[in-house]
Length: 616
Image (cartoon, rainbow, N blue to C red; front, side, top):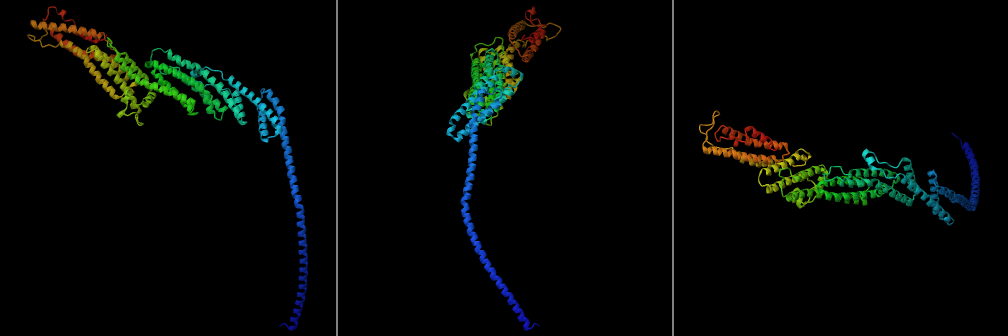
C-alpha cells in the first residue's frame, strides 16, 4: 500500500509536467497568432497581385486572338490573291480550248466556277472587275463545251436504215463508248458545278439533234406504212402485212436505245428529256395512223382488221411511254389515236352487219347456177379475219354501249356490260348473230326472187353449206355458239327436203295401179288394154320430159361441196332409181307400144349413170 509521501511526490511531478505543458501551449498559441497574422498579410498581398495581373492576362489573350486573326486574314488575303491570280492562267487555257485534253479543260473551268462562287460570297468591292472577267471566261468555256457536246451528238446522229436492224433482229445502236463517255463527262461537269442554265442548254441541244435523228430515221417507215396500204389492191388485208408493224417495232427499238443513252447523260429527270426527244417521232406516227384510218374507212370491207392491228401496235407504244410518265402531250396524242382507232374498230363491227343487210337487200337477181353469193363469201371471210384478233375484238365489243344494232348482245336491255360479264360468251354471241343474220337474210331474199324451184333450194344449200364448212373447218368453230350449229343442221335438212320436192313430180310418173291381165311374168309380154297402153305411154313421156328438164337444170347448177353433192345425188337416187327400176321392169316386156324406144329413153343403168353425174 502506497504511503502519503509517495502520493505527494507524484502530485508534485504531475504539477511540474502540467506547468511545462501549459508553457508549451502558451508558446504554441503565440506562434499560431503570428502565423495567422502572416497568412492574412500574404492573402492580402496575393489579392493585390491578382488584381494587378488580371488586366495583363486579359490584354495578353486579346493580343493572342488579334494575332490569330491577323494570321487568318493574311492567309485569306493570300488565298484571295490566288483567286485573282487564276484569271490570266484560266483565260489562256480557255482560249486554247480542250485541245485533246478535255479533263484538264474541265478542271480549269471548275476552278473558275469555284472562284466565282467564293468572290460572290466575299462581296469585295475590289473583286467586281475580276468577277466580271471570270464570268466571261466561264461563259466562253461553256460555249466551247456546248459545241463539243453538239459535235459529238451530230457525229453520231446520222439517220440510219431501221429495216436493217428489224429484219435481222438486231438491237438499235447507241452512241459508241468513247464519245458516249465524253458527253456523260460534260453533263456530269455541269451537274457537279450546279449550273442549271448550262444543263438546260445541253438538254436543248440533245432534244434538237436526237429528235431529228429519230424522225428522219423513221420517216421512210411512215411512208412505207401508207404505201403498203395503198398498193395492196382489193384483196382482203392479210395479218401483219402493213408496214405499221415494222414501223412500230423500229420506233420502240430506237426509243429503247435512246432511253439507255439519256439515263447516263441526264440522270436527273431523264424521263422528261426522253419524252421530249421522242415527241416529234410520235407526232409523225400519229399522223401516219390518221391517214391509215382514212384509208380503212374508204376500204372498210377489205381493210377493217387493219384497225385492230393498229390498236394493238398503239398499245405497245403506250406501254413503253407510260413507264416514263402517264401524263403529258405524248400520252394525250397516243390516247387520241387510240380512241380514233377504237371508234373505227367498233364501226367495223356494225358495218359488217349493216353491209350484209344492205347488199342482200339491193340484190335484184340470183345466180343462174345456184352458186354461192358473193356476200356469203365476203362475210365469212371477214369473220375469219376478224377472229385472228380475238382479244382486241373482244375489248371493242365489251367497250360498246347498247345501241339498236347491237342490242342482241345485252341481257335485260342493259345499257352497258356488267363487270362480271363472260367475255368469251359475248364474243361468241356477236359472231353467231352475224352468221344467223347472214343466212336468214339470204333465205328471205332468195324466196322472193327464185320462188320455189330446184335452183332455190340448191342456192340456199350451197350458201348454207359454205357457211357451215368454213365454220367447222376453221378457227371460227371456237367463235360460234353451239346452238348455231344445231340451227344450221335443221335448216340444211329442210333445204334438202325442199330440193327433193322438185323430184317428186318426176317420180310420181312412175307410180301406177295398172291392172295387168294374167299377172306379171318374166317369160312373156304383158298384155295391156288400149287405155292402159295410153296411160303407160303418157307416163314414160312425162317422166322423160321432166327428167330431162331436171337433168338440164341440175347440170347447170354448181355444187362446190363434194359432201353436199354426194348427199343430194344419194337422196335423188333413193327416190328415183327404185321407182324407175320397178316401172321399167314392169313395162319393158309389155305391149304398151310397138315402138318402145320412142317412149323408153333410159334403161335402168342409164338412169343411174345420169344421176351419178347429176351436177357435172
